[in-house]
Image (cartoon, rainbow, N blue to C red; front, side):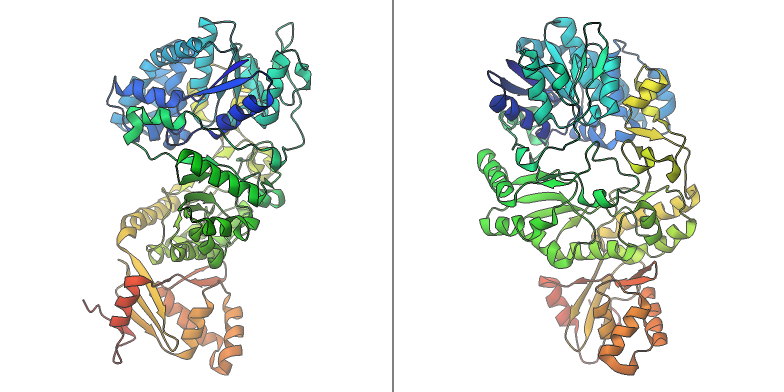
Length: 633
């Protein structure tokens, strides 16, 4: 059986498809007589469109990810899905006129008009491969492109079996795809390593369609049937290593070869160990299976090293929703010892300690995404994040200490939040301008399928409607669109626009100032020397020399309440450390931007000085230095 697996736009072109890499191995190794090939239609699109327009990498990134919540990428290919080059054009331009620049609107409508031509082109290529089965993966903004391609393939070659799967086909979404688009013969829901080979065996008559978990198929009357999804997640030993044969060769032959530096996509775990205990209220990332499972550290190490050797690539994007903490003492030290100069991206929990972060950095981690989301302890409590605002600031500080780039977003719009939850943080953001700012301005939360906010109206969101981009893209009844959608519109909750604008103004200033800001310290045993270059503070060099303030600064390496800090200081400094003295010190430190306070806790925000900065600070030290000294050149 010849199987062609297709990765449509807008998949990221710098990453091979993990899903299709795994399915290729599943077919090749577990389907008798089966052979799978991957068609990189996302890269084909780049070559096709750059011959006809001034389309750029920035454009591709916009439609791939940046415009996800606007749905621009999916709308582009809706013209092909509905065989109408002006499909919902008036509605889209009216709705998006104040959200897209004139140049972006021109590009979007131009792509929308041209999309049917590309879909016809790619469908002809698919048919030319003469496959028995063609499988489309659909994640993020791939849905309309995949659906349109399946429609055109069926039009050209009705005998080819069309299949869809991926994150956009999980649960009810997959059922809606199958019910509403008859040119999709089958939809695979859930973990494809089991169900996709099962479907192929059913097509060969080796098993009944009813036996394939999660499969959507049609009975003799043409009625869509959805098999129950598996209730048992795939054990980690059964999660295959991907086969990326052909991807790097295709990218090298593409006009996009100079656009990106390709990376390997690897997977060590599925599910979320934190979500099993406390599902973050807004998170729908894990779909049908929250249960956390991780590969054996030795097996995952061999997989990582094997992929690096096979494809001669050291950049790796790890797709795990959260780091298995056991890897910190098992997998990561082996990577350090291996000598491979890996560059990796991982999602972690924001309460990791400095030593653990240093292990990540030593193992080749460059970017970490700790799911910070807010610096307000009260708002974090509404999210059920299990961390405090000061712990999140400590993560940012310790990430900088370890040399890690901390990637994070600031969210708002939670039921029960109040203006003071934001204003208390906003006024302190200038003190943090030497640390990684949020990727973008603060964003109102989206209600995602599978999240507690979606599943439990009692948490504050009871009036859910498919997000506007679905209504601009699909011609479906409201109930069908509800099942198809992943993101939903709701009446806004939480703080108003004035509060958000104050926060966003501070974030914009933070992003502008970050590259030129610094706050470092050097612990010289009998004193602590700090050096600051931040726009909001008029001091450059500061020395802490009193025993109490030196001890307090060291103590605030970790978040403390004032009462806890006083108690611990008395243990080391005797009665000289009283609460009023500590509070006065903290007041002065906050004015100088040395600490962050929230939710009754305090943490110091300076990063240890290293290398040439350390040498500079030693040169600054002199016996007659004032505690608050001017810059010396």
